[in-house]
Image 1 (cartoon, rainbow, N blue to C red):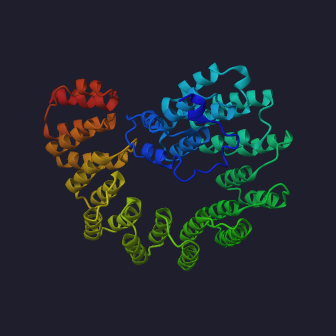
Image 2: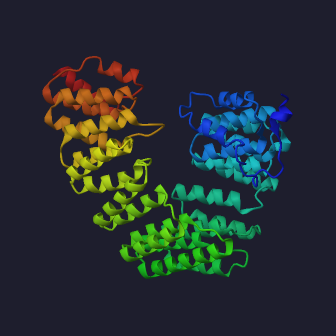
Image 3: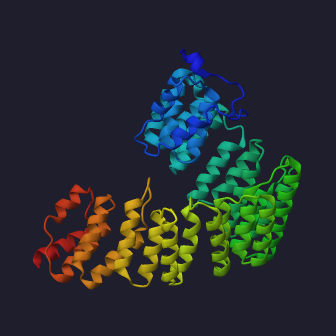
Length: 493
């Protein structure tokens, strides 16, 4: 079978939908791979050997879906397979560059960009490398790239300016955001909704609430912008954080009005808008409005998503309505298949923070009995509760279980790890400290602070550790000044 038949190009790629029985099954097969060591290309080629065809648009859509769920390696594999079968467009080069950065790091992405032909170093690929630098929080390279884009005439739309404002917000250089806005206006670049949104956030971070209102007024007078519910979600969030509650309530009313207008206009419902309303009213502590919006949500959507339940239960917990949270978790458990542990994690966290360990343990037992799978965060939530109640051995047991089920790049909070070790240190419990240290070392989660805690525990009981410095070197952990002092003390003891 020729590559042309295997991979059919489609001009209008973004509009095409999966057809029944086309590549839905293929995407499912790749999604179920799980382990990134397994090859998505092998699955793809196996699908073709079964006599099926794959369109270029469908490959792109699958890659997009995999990216959405952080399956970057598999997305890159099938994207590069596509590139070997059919030439990349400039937009596809930009996607490829982004995936390379996510899988292989910024240096590989830079090399890829440097090797592109001059004709393919256009606004799309420049925007992609700029986005990479922004994510790396590399101000120097981001600013240099932005200047080059201006020189080449590629900074002729809001996107690169928005990227720079995002960078400055992330780096807490809030005062630079209004300067970027000034540059946009000077260069005749129209602001989009995101530009206005981040501009307001910068003034809020600088505690210039009067200027936030000024930006909102300018936005509402901008004929090029039709403010949607997202804008008023941002405004409400800003006012809630600043405790300007009356204006926050007003923004939420406008958010709901915009949401309804958009639903009428587009003849579709916006789940995420309801989620925002529930979360923001929860932050305001307005329980009546949270319940009212949830009732509207259930009328709009016969089936509630896990995400919406998480949003609702989190809001109720935040308001101290534990009874309400329990009611909705029970309802969720009655209709769902325990497929998203994050819902019950919210209630579990509320129980442990209040010291209701019996309730927490009963809930966890019920979940596991019915096929639910606690994740690393589940066990760490339980560990945090045990730490607070000074049940350190139970905390260690829960933390050990969290480490045994952790996935991808999940890491425990360093404060929790050090609290457990610190308790053993105070008690002079060398055996438990060594046991927990061994667990941490087994998953490569040791640090100078952890080693120092272990050394202090040894010192407390007058035990001289053997080969400790050598083990540190094996773990690629560098001793600090405290380590040197502790080692000297142990040698003298």
